[in-house]
Length: 210
Image (cartoon, rainbow, N blue to C red; front, side, top):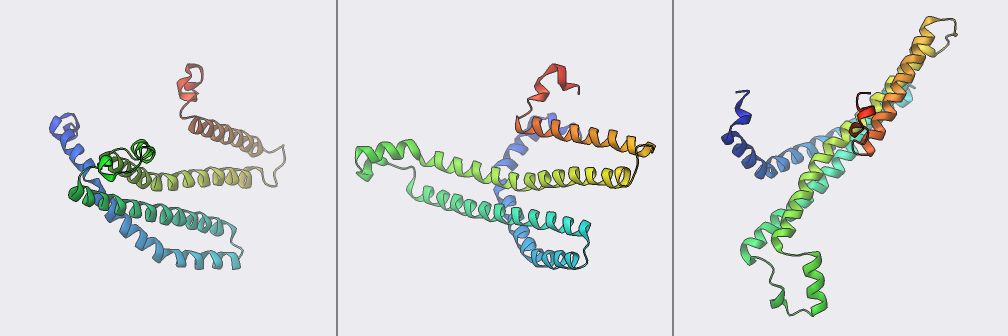
């Protein structure tokens, strides 16, 4: 079974699943939106409870959870709206076919503008499909980005609290904490620079090993 990915039939199956993935996207989005709207008030209550008890750690966790919920709710609602528009466009195309600009009797200026901006109906539907798939994927990627940022700063705070807080330079743990803190900070900066430059550091032979 582990070697099936090399077979042409398996590749055809993946292509077919990829074309029909919109059904799973809508299903997942619907359940996720329902669950997120149900969980959001409980997270707000937990955050207020943590604030009242001055529990900083739990408050930060709740802030991250609330932010993740807000991002997912916004993106998934946008995804459902665009998918609805996409389904409507498919139904309209089934009835009307492609756009015939000449039969609209618009002026040449409007015809040229619509042909340049909208193009064929098939192209419009294809662009909608791409937007929907990208938004659905980015919705969950943004959560992982947020978790990565939270874990990185959490690790730095952990090192400062455990190894550097109320320690003198005569302690071995202090030097270990400084080395670990420099390692985390440099690694975080290199990863961030490589991310925003779309893998620029990976393309350089002299720094790719690092």
